[in-house]
Amino acid sequence: MHKHGPGFLRLVDDAKREISECSVEDVKRRLDAGDKLTLVDVREESEFAADHIPGAMHLSKGIIERDIEERVPKHDKEIILYCGGGFRSALAAENLGRMGYTTVISMAGGMRAWRDANYPIEK
Image 1: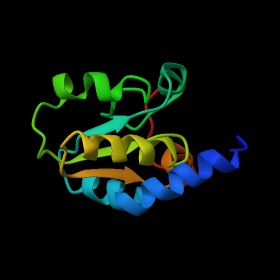
Image 2: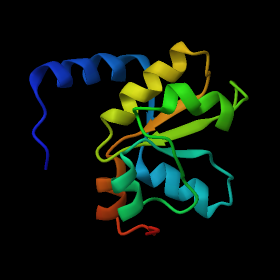
Image 3: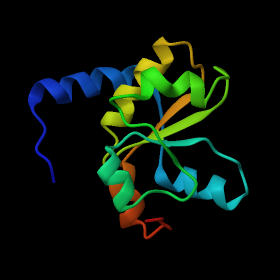
Image 4: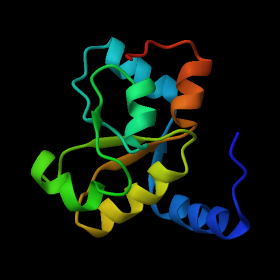
């Protein structure tokens, strides 16, 4: 488990006050119901290569703001972001909101919570 510094945690706490979050159970329930979700993994490329949620696209936190409009041109499309634990995705969700995306959700708990729930993963 990565130890996060206090400045980073304050930044994440501020972002979480501005964004919407969902649980891994919400995402799994919607996938099971056949919803076509736009899932974006914002982790680093090596993390995505190791495992990810089936059907997720990869746009790491370092490039998401640069590339999102090409990959998801409709600013009103729902986008669910996730990372390792829900911190980087919260920061990315806040930035996408600033860019005019109206329905961006960060998956709380991230990939760690997804794995802990024994939900399906792709490698």
